[in-house]
Length: 124
Picture (cartoon, rainbow, N blue to C red):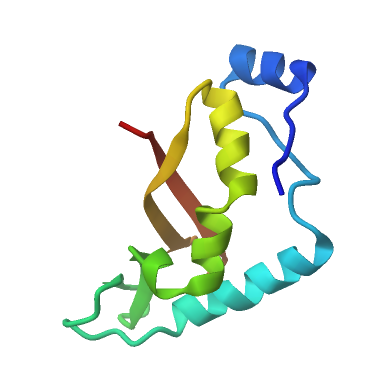
């Protein structure tokens, strides 16, 4: 289902370079997003995986996952969300052109919270 950006939202985005949308995902989708993030966190971390887990050494000297990249192709639910009509329609309206997912990352912040970062690139 597509999401429609209002003229006021478009103007805010044009002036400020960002837009907070609080009604894009349903409550159920937000809950699912948490489960999906944990699934990506728990993907195997071997040198031959097609997704890209990155680990760092924390202050306690323990090896910890700091982010995972290139996972949408290997997680059907994230793939559907990130490449689905709803997200792409929002980005396309804001950018004024068709959009596609270029690169996705899941990054753990300092408090071990998973933060979804999406880099978008317009279609050629």
